[in-house]
Length: 411
DNA sequence: TCTGGGGTCCTCAAACTC
DNA sequence: TCTGGAGTTTGAGGACCC
Image (tube, rainbow, N blue to C red; front, side):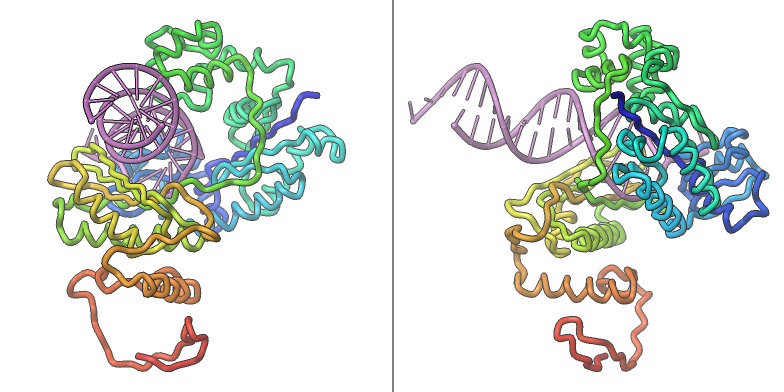
C-alpha cells in the first residue's frame, strides 16, 4: 500500500498572524520586518509579494518596491503561540507529525486513513479547522513521499490543496523546473544549468556520474533519487537538537578587538549557554562566526575533552576563538554556536581553567533560576552592561534564595 | 542599494592514528 | 626507528532551508 504523506504549510505565516489583530489591513500589502537599519523582510502578504517584495529582501529595497506597504515589526511570541496551537491540532489526527519549522509540518496519514477516510478529506478538515480556530490559512500537498508532498504544497499556495496520486508522481515531477526540488538553491541550480539541466526530467535522465562530478556525490545521489520519484524518508516526530547558536549583526561595523565586540560575544555566549542548560543539554564543541564588513565570513571552533554547560567555559572559549579568527579590521556580525550536544544526565563535567569549578555551576544555577522566575533579561553580568549605563541605588530587595530556598532579604 | 537569524548537512583539506 | 599509506577525526567554509 502506498504511503499517504501530507505537507501542511501556513501561508505568509508571520504576516497572517499580524493580520489577526489588524483586520483593517487585510487586502493591503503588509510587510513584517525589523525596524533596525540592517534588517531584511521576514514575511510579506501576497499583496506585497505582487509588488516584488519577498522574504530575505533588504528592508530599504522593500520600501522602494512597495512604498505604500504597511511595515510591522515581528512579534515572535504571537507566532509561536499560533504555531503551537496548529501543531497540537495536527497531532489530534495522527501522532506521526514532523514539525520542520515554525509554520510547516509533515503528517504520515497512511494509518489514519483507516479511521478517518481518505487523506484529502482529512487534510481539508484540518485546513478548515486551522482557518476557523486560528484565523490564518494553510496550504497543503499530499503525495506518496515527503518530497512530493512538499513540492505539491508549494504549488497549492495560497490557501489550496494539491493531491498527487501515487501513480501520477512522475508525471507531476518531470515537467517541473529543476529548482522545484528541495535542496536545489541558486548555486546547485547554476551548476546543473551548466550541464543543460533545466527540468526535473532533464535531471532524472542525466548520467549519475556527470551529475556527481558537477555537484558532489551525496547531493547528486539524493537529488537524482528525488527526480526519479524515489523517496522513502520516514516522517519522524521526535527531533534531536544538533546545535544551538546565536548571532548578531551590528548597527555599525565594529573594529576587531574592541570592547563592544567582546561584550557582544560574551552576551551571545551567555545566551546560548542559558538555552543549552534550559534544554537539559551539554556541548562538546564551541564555535564562533565572524563576518567582515565586506561580507566575508570566517569561523573557528574547538572541541573540548569533555562536555560542558558552564557559561564561563563557553564564554572564555568563544572570546579566545574570536580573537584567533581570521578576518579584516571591521566586523559586521559575530555569532556563537554550540555543537556535539548530549543530554546532561551522566555526562562528565568539564572544569573551567583558572576558576574554582565548584562555584561555577552554582553561579549558573542561580542565574538560571532568577531568569526562569523573572524572565530572560532579569539578570546579566555587570561586564555586559555598557559603560555609563549603570546607576546603582540603595534599595532593599526581598527574594527567595534560589539555593537555600529560604526567604532572605538582600541588597 | 544591500544582504537577519536559527538551523542542518555537505565537502574538502589538514591533522592525527594505526 | 623511520616511513608511507589508509582511514578517521576535526575544523573551516559554504549551500540550503524557513
